[in-house]
Structure formats: C-alpha cells, structure tokens
Image (cartoon, rainbow, N blue to C red):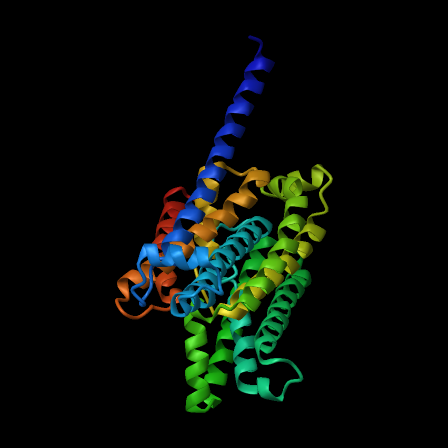
Length: 350
C-alpha cells in the first residue's frame, strides 16, 4: 500500500466516524424528544401519549389531544429548534471571533434580545404590530443594534478579534443596564411579565413561533453551510485564511448578521436561555473535530440534545411544576464554563 492509499484510507475512516457521530446525535434528539413528550405535570402515561399522538389533533379524547398537540408538541419542537439555533449561533461566534468563550449569551446578543422583548412587553400595545410579532421584531432590531455597535467599535480600531470580544462584553453590560432601567420603571404587573420572560421558558412556545423559528433556521443553515470551507480556513487564523483567498472581513460581517437573525428568532419567543450556545459547539468540536462541513450540523444537533435534556430535567426535578429552562441551563452551564476556563489556563492559552 502506497502512502497515498494510506492517506485515502485514513480519510475515509475519519469521514465514516463523523457520519456515525452525526447519526448518533440525530438519534439522541429523537429519543430525548420522545422523553420530553411523555413527561410533564399532567401525569399522562406513555400509552396515553402514544394514543393521543396517533389519534391526531382531532382525537376523541379532547383532554389528551389538547395536552399533546397544543402544549407538549410545540414545546418539544421549540426546544429542539432553539437548541439547534443557539448551537449554530455559538459555533459561528466562536469561529469568526477565534475565541472559545464567545457565544450569543456571553457577548451581549441575548441581552440585547431581552431588552427588545422587554420594550415590546411595556410598549407593545402602542405598536402597529400583532402582539405575538412585537417581541420578535423588537428583539431582532435590538440584536442588530448590538451587532452594529460591536462591528463599528471594532472598525474604529481595526477588525481585531480581541477588540470584537471586548466590544461584545461592553455591549452586554450596556443592554443589561437598559433592561434593569426598564424593570425599575415598569409597573408591578409588567415587571412580573418581564422577569418571567427573562427566566426563559419553553412553555411560551406555539405552533406560530415554531414555524417562524423553523423558517429562520431553514434559511440560516444553508447560508452557513455555504461558507463551511471558508470558516474552516478562518479557524486556522486570519493570515492563513487570507492566503487562501478568503475575504475575512466579509465573512465576519455575514457571520454577525446570521448570528443576529438566529439568536433573535430563538430568544424572542422563549426568553433568555444561556450557555447552550457556549457548551454545544465545544461538545460538537470534541466529537467531530474542526472541519466545519461536519461541525456545523454537529453543533446544531448538540444544541438540540442539550436543550431537550434540560427540558426533561426541568420537568423531572420540578415535581408538579416546570422549572423555567433558562434556570436549568444556567445551573448546568456555569460549572462547564469554569471547566473550560481552567482547561484553557492549564494549557497556557493567552
């Protein structure tokens, strides 16, 4: 066997392993979605849930049909879509900023979306928009403002990734302060709505929000996949990417717009859900490596697995109540974040 044949054989083995990992992640999403459907405070048994699923939304058992088709199915579908969206957005931010701690949550995009949604809760009745559309529209507008601020600040100093990260942290604190100001000015009833929204909860999901987020992901995923080769080159550094003919600045601009779109669509309907966008890309990277052709779908699937697992956990530990999923992801995500920081410090990374 020649050295070329050995290289080809090794490449095929790596590709086969990556395909197996993707199939395993997809199977985990299906299994956790099933577990999420049969858990909840209504004490519906697995046979009852299966019978209601097979009977359809017009089934004879109206209570079971309502619970499954109007509450649990949109909640489960939203959990999978939000997890996939945050995993994809986190991977994009870590790649274009060359920073393993970058994510929509840690760099202010989620805080901006929260501010936009809080504005909609306080002043949405005065807007010429349907109630269900006001929060997503203002959340997306606020995220675009955050992305524009970060990019503008970086352009003033040159598009250096460290400046982008510091600008993101500054934007996060700014929007958190604006959120606090709105909470201070809000009436007790509005304050309660804002605080509950900021907890993050999949129970706000409806078929309309599932359709909107599913459409956004259907647009964003092919757009990101088209840049897979360029993103892989960028992960080697700006110099290498430019030497291979990649328009690094243009790639970063497209990345910021896609992250803003996906984050706003995910967060605006269910509230702030942290750490999924940080943890899922690292898990996917550990499983399939840095090749973005495989890493992009792996990060999206890992995000869906993370959020569905958190949803099941929130129902199981909450007893008769469902703990807001944003609290669960934060409690699980903080130790993982500490682990990442310590591993990076031990590796001597700057």
